[in-house]
Image (cartoon, rainbow, N blue to C red; front, side, top):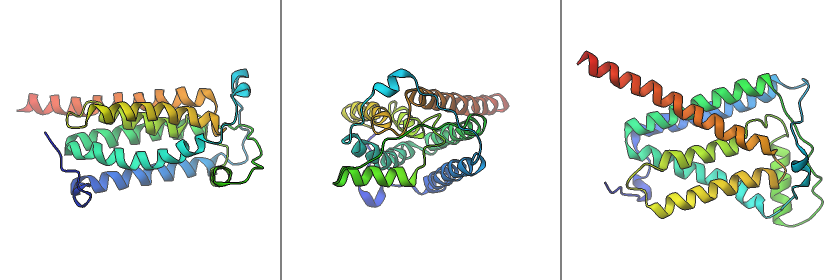
Length: 218
């Protein structure tokens, strides 16, 4: 089934409440976790390899690019069908709720380098550092969202294979960027992917069970 991707028809009406709800859910839980853990002891989960990884300024462009890719990919996933939209956003919201609970139980932090250079890369990094304090790191929401985007699209037939591969490679780059701009630690990457998969699993369980119940009643 081909989909018309003209901008004026990009966002299905049925998906708007779900997409806006997912955004509001993420922002509210993320910043609420920062407030609720303020003043508490934060754990440093770094391992020796984290200290050996260099700071690579170029990867701040990948880190910023993730924000734009999420918006596009969540919309593309929502366009597949009302059912797929509900399943995807439910998985997202479950994963964010699990992340919120982990943030509260295990507050984490890291030591970030001082940015002393000039130019656009330095300014973009300084902006991220100022806007997003080094807490609520485990799991990485950057990795979680990027992984979900790829998983949402991988089984959609009308999405070109080349785009799925690019999306997968970009997801790996996003994961790398989180540690190469010193926003996260290695363990945060794997935690983000694991929580994303749990969200997908629970969402599938909820909707498959509901569908089976309807079949039995019919």
